[in-house]
Image 1 (cartoon, helix red, strand yellow):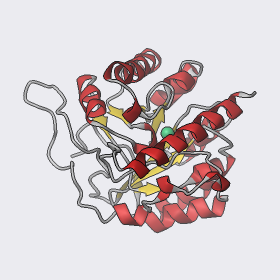
Image 2 (cartoon, helix red, strand yellow):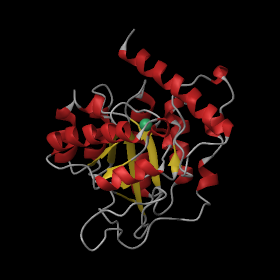
Image 3 (cartoon, protein in one colour):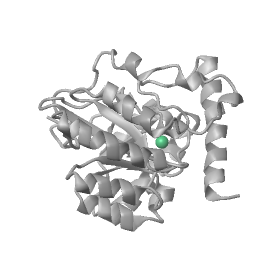
Image 4 (cartoon, helix red, strand yellow):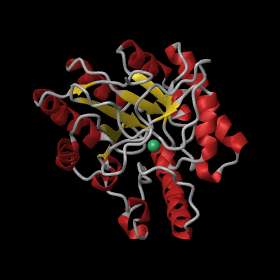
Length: 278
Ligand SMILES: [Zn+2]
């Protein structure tokens, strides 16, 4: 079984778990920015994890952003919800790429970003990052922000505190080793956050960032469809979710080449949030 198949299998299994948890009504999915579980074929069952459309959660109250969230003594405060967007002054937008790095796709994404002199965020998984530290170093060199997306992309709401901590801590260590600095942002796989994840993330000095616009690129809907979702969702402060790993991401790579120049032509400042995005 190839690595891809293993990844797909793992994610299909986890997708089932998300649906089951959701159906039971006991999920600790605190955020409106729920990441759909990748790779579940439509025939596998009802797409319970896709109940929230991007347009739905864009209308949610914009919780959790505003003044700096660091206490006077320098510790990161514990949030109860992830950030969904950033301050939109100056028509700012943020592009995020999750689950990588993958040497088949990440270099092309880095190349496109470089060609347009644009900075983005990469929420990496430790198990991918540990074998691709050169790509993490390249991200840092280019001014991109490397965030923590756990070690092996589990559903955190199913794990105990010790496991959650291990998932996040080990990944932060790899990032620090490759980039020279520990990550200051994290994102829960599938957008499934819980109190422990917020607390441990804050302990490790990280802010939780969800997203505003989901490209649904993991479903490989076609390059044009990904481009359309980004362009329809474009607005000041928006955070866009895409993937540079976890399956065939050639559509995500091609889509970026199309939508990035269009966003820039429309006057968007595509950049990364500062630690306190003020
Ligand atoms: Zn992910």
